[in-house]
Length: 244
Image (cartoon, rainbow, N blue to C red):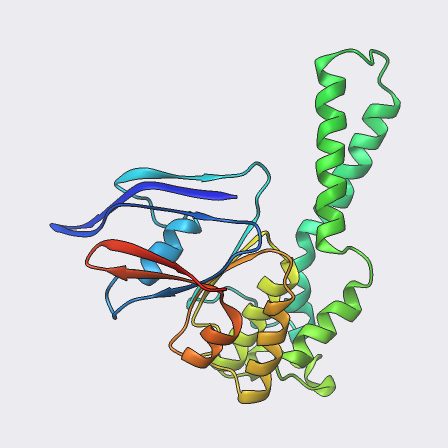
């Protein structure tokens, strides 16, 4: 699904990574480990397309979607918790609109042998598949289920984001990423602001997750319970370990 090839990243005169490479499969559960400053967060940002490598490449299978949980948050302080979580489904509405456009265009098409017709059919199939993956039905139920799993109560749903601490806002950000259901989840310390009950819920959610996961966490128990493969960063190199 994702191929990292000969990746090199410099910070000034320091070489953070030197020609590293690995592959992420569709259902991989990878724990990214290493000493502080080894480059774990930088590698995650590079996979997310935020950090640009000096050399090498990251190749994604066609149509691969990526969700990245950073430590920086982007949200509306005036939105309710429920409304902010619901922004995760902007893509669903866009997809529905595009599906309608393609359906009309294909219905009105007269040359069934043209390249344009074939391209539209192919895109229609991709959009339909993505909507199925996103689970465009019962969105309200999904939002509430994830928010409650992350510790919010029913009475919190209509409270403004401005009323919550940074830790609770980060829970909403995590909820948005989970609701987007990307093919690849990139999670940087997702348990930092969670209590035990929410961590246990997140563990179960990730165990059943349909896509691939790469995560950084200082919580060794969480890593052991969720991941089946470890990529260790040491002195600019990576060492890949897979467990049965």
